[in-house]
Image 1 (cartoon, rainbow, N blue to C red):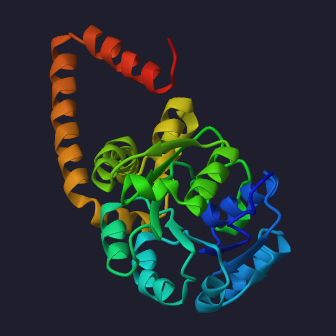
Image 2 (image 1 turned 180 degrees about the vertical axis):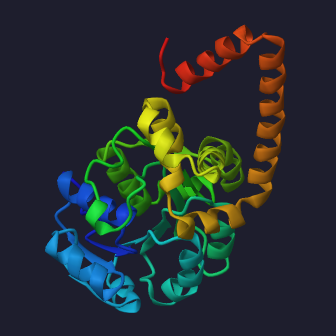
Length: 287
């Protein structure tokens, strides 16, 4: 006999790319409960037109009726909203987030929520495009979804188990980390690549050669500069809340670039390509 679902109403706070995609993915994978959205009026109108949410409402109203609250705004907004959410959330509600850094969010959440009621989260998925119009029901498929529980026992709460089951149904690869380990790993796997892409684009564009380079640009340059189209509004919070890790990673990359320059100058680049290919194949799971 199947148990009664704990999650019957979901409140998406921030119905943009990630929040909207989460709502669409739930529907696509069989969620039959209500999905309410909390965002600006213009966004909520779009979200209803696109059938991403069932209704829109103010934050306190949406949170008060929810069994699951999904905070999908930029990090700064999440931090501002945590105390408001904690004041009106139901005692048995699960609150989770999709912020790109975890230590600051989890630490702030611990000031407002009793143990076990907030679960830090981060879907490793996204696009350069923003807004609910870019939402995609398959955005999370095949992508890591990291959660940072406050204790191993939190994962045994029925509502948490149900939420994690939904994450798996979306096609995500569930990973459990501490907030510290998350920020260290993601600082290298996500935040450093963003900075490298932005730096390359800025450098190449500084000489006013964009029209000339566009004529000869192949997939390599397009791939390397894709992340440079990302929003600074989103990334400013990420850089601020993971600055120590990012600065250390950038220092290591600068040393690595100097080593590459020295090897190019000496004509000794075979090991560079060999070692680089091994890493590239490994993260793509290519034998």
